[in-house]
Length: 399
Ligand SMILES: Cc1cc2nc3c(=O)[nH]c(=O)nc-3n(C[C@H](O)[C@H](O)[C@H](O)COP(=O)(O)OP(=O)(O)OC[C@H]3O[C@@H](n4cnc5c(N)ncnc54)[C@H](O)[C@@H]3O)c2cc1C
Image 1 (cartoon, rainbow, N blue to C red):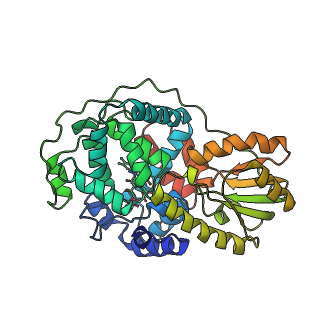
Image 2: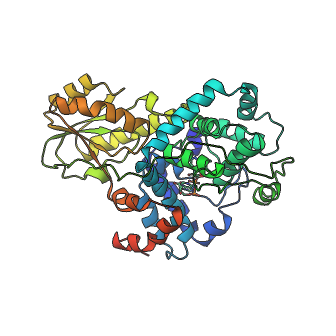
């Protein structure tokens, strides 16, 4: 059961972090690539759904890690946590890659001739050892180890020669931690589209070694041919965020993109009313939906206590009812944590002009972590990662 593996509360996330932090140093660095199987305790933290929906923050995770290890000892773990930040920042500056992905997915859904091959791959019925097991594991648990995600994507693209965008779609529909940037850009990275020409080719030896000999698939592709695509648009500056006036009465809207508004707005914000959005259309699949449904209830209880303002449920982004609730609360603005590129951001972009024209602007507030790191995601991860120690120090996060 997904709820057993990932109880969807902040307390469960904090407990998992506390239990994991002592292992975030050498134990993580040496064991993180091994996927011993779904029933085994591995070296990884399994914090991704909590980080994805921001039930805990990267700052908390890195802070807890550096509370127990030097940055040198925990370098690998800290860098992994920052991969998520990097991917998000990269996509913020290239939102057209998100639109291009949606177009490519729809084009392939409408035109890819071998539907049966897609069905077999998704059902774990290709006859490829490991690959079939990971497909079934994903369907049953909503989670895959990072190395299994890489092997799976590589075999999907290069051995089975299936469209990468449909593989990304399969992951998004079943992962509990389904995330626009981490998923799409990782699939692009495996395909060789992200670091152009640098493909990731899974090999039987590598799979056997890092699955403790559980799988050694035969017949894997030995040549990786990068799929073709139109050139990407150039990077654009990070989108500006509007000024948040903490003294103005506000209606707080909590979205699945950030379920810890307490650490965005703090106790001084003048919050007169609040609503928690649960719109299934902005979530990817049933695993993500059932996780977020519970996580949103947890957030609603916390928000009610923290801001002394029990929130209402917003079942979809209906402008009329949102405005009515904000006005009833006497709010002059609707505030929400910044939603990065993806379905929630698209929905907010649709309603923002309507709210502004009614005199109740939508104000998105970006976390300091993202505001600091995202501007540096202009090129590859290597130059980004070089900046991590200095930036963590500036943010008061060093061991
Ligand atoms: C093809 C493919 C698709 C992926 N799709 C998603 C997705 O939809 N959602 C998602 O959250 N992650 C995705 N990832 C990234 C990564 O696999 C997961 O975040 C990670 O496996 C989560 O497990 P963990 O928390 O135990 O990781 P740990 O190894 O314990 O890492 C700690 C944290 O660091 C971050 N992290 C680790 N590895 C990566 C990575 N490669 N990229 C980005 N962040 C990382 C995550 O926040 C993770 O929780 C994908 C990777 C690949 C190769």
